[in-house]
Length: 548
Image (cartoon, one colour):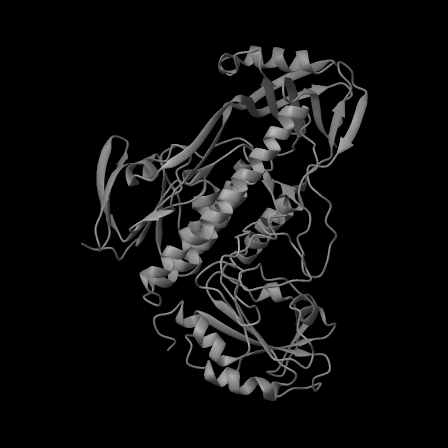
């Protein structure tokens, strides 16, 4: 069998599937990505993008997500039966802009537009989604996966090395893989959601308007110009009405919205509509053999908290760099076991958190209850992972896992998100250039940050790591502003940075006279915090088959 043309088959082209495809392609791994729908999906769907996901799109060099997305509008609640405001509230806790967090504002971008953006980037790498292609069945062996695909009634047998199921809550991949999908279906939460074009007297396009009681009968209208200058994303909840009947009639949807908004409404067009029930479920593991699941194929939950799409994107990012190293022959297949091990605790805590928000909203009837800062996802960590190494933290046997964590700029461990730092000056090679640390982090290599008082202190560490494959490991010396003004180029021609304003040393909690080495994984997570070269080699021995 030949697996050389497309060693990875991705089933499903939503955000999670597109992100894992883009991550692999940027790592030089060809992919084939299919989707059973004949046309790209329309609709806003999951539209919230949290700060951690904005960082990952930045690492993927997809700046359009942050540039096109809009800040989440304030939610305006109204007194019953009137257009008199009751209160304005935020769906996200306030976060100040700091040097370590360049993307501090959660934003909203419709999934339809997000998919377009990601597909364009795939196109730049000569990859396109095969629409109308459906996975019928598959079987796997030690060497690869044989999939049976169907398009336009024609069956195709396709051999590949790896397969990733990103095919949604009804995932064919998950079902045929035999993974459990335990949880519950909530009969007390059902909504009709969609996109609509309408104008309402007194409805501004600044607020997210909410009418009625969330636990009984309510309507939410979020303005979005992605649909049109009169476009809205809507959510209808009603315990008394049969919502499955409403979605079958544009007229019934118009009537329901008009009955909930106490003002004159002019309807233009119903763009898209769907019924949504809260299923709260997750897999028992994220892979079996050479087949993996990401996103909704692995976990579903209530939309309260807006964590779903973001979690799927982060699944994809975690899997992508690991699969790339294994496919390149640089890492053992056992590295792929850490995908499931690192994501399971995160998703388990996510389901608990979003379910708690749902329960409170139903009980109180208020969707704007106080939101936890955890929703920013900046505190998500894998400190518990078998492949992270921290020589500055004493291991505690039986320490409980706190995968969502609490974001704290004053505390940093291996397994945490790597912070940013602006205004670092890259020197050497007869030129200088201002950088941020985030400019260094990419999905196709580890970045070794060597914090040292002077360049001379770094030379033994750099020399010991010279054997590392430069295609997957990049080294950068970070000097304090007190270091010599014009350091000589490093013997290994590595990146040399001067922390002119101390932001990097502050973000990474390093003293100016201290030697401390950080290894930043391709997913922007701190893989190791160590004293020197021996610690770095120890970390890489968990990742690579051979450092040379």
